[in-house]
Image 1 (cartoon, rainbow, N blue to C red):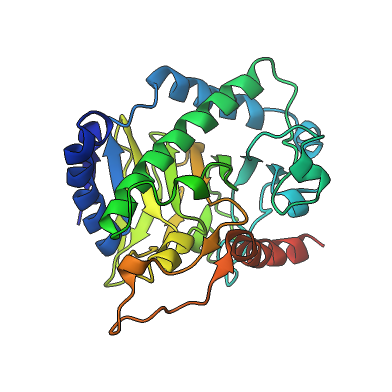
Image 2: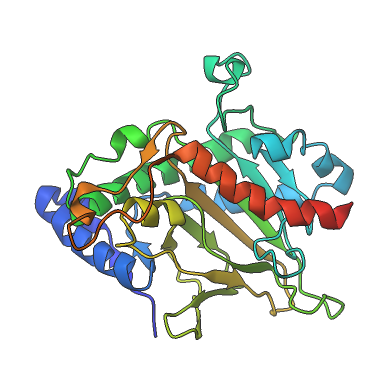
Length: 319
């Protein structure tokens, strides 16, 4: 089974007809595998190359320099996550990776930070020339791509194309740089690069390097390899959008297994809604035969519940 590859050219240049055509393709993928590739997405190839170079530069820093960027991580979801600092599958040992999180870039005196709004925080920045500008340029580019994809989601789910726009204009989005060292023979039983999990937000836009290692669990329980395809992003539906769609869309379990003997790098953009957005079943996804499955919840409360569970075991294992 191969994951579908969807050309976004019509979405970007063909107006309403192009949007409808792409919405149908994306909607089918979102209902079945929950995973798909997109090509002709509009994100500049040079910017992508510079973002990967930034990831390499960051993870090459001495451990003490990286650990200096962990300030208040469990409260802010910003900065460095040390090796084995996370458990995506709480039933298995900690993940064999390190990561760095960047969120919506706000100044220390931003009213939202001063008010203590959830998931509003100051980013942590390594002392690498040009690093911040590169990473924020990439953040903005994939944020725009994610908002464009939500126009297709909205149309497919029976609401106006701009339905999600005011719910994604100041999102709790996280740009995550990831580094997976070669998996060694002394790993604990069941310990892999990233444990089996579903993503928490609306959609993830993933750029893996040529090493690969992403695996997606099909409906019959078999694991499908998702190789890197040059010029594409791998996209997957997250739990929040699944909930918003009243389970019309599916959030599919996946994992990372790095058995290549090489270092693996990837860049993931998790597009979560604005913190105050109400996640409630869309009208187009509810009927007498299909009542709402979930009560309304704020996007911030939903994300907090998921992150708390993810990090709790990893924290206890490091004590």
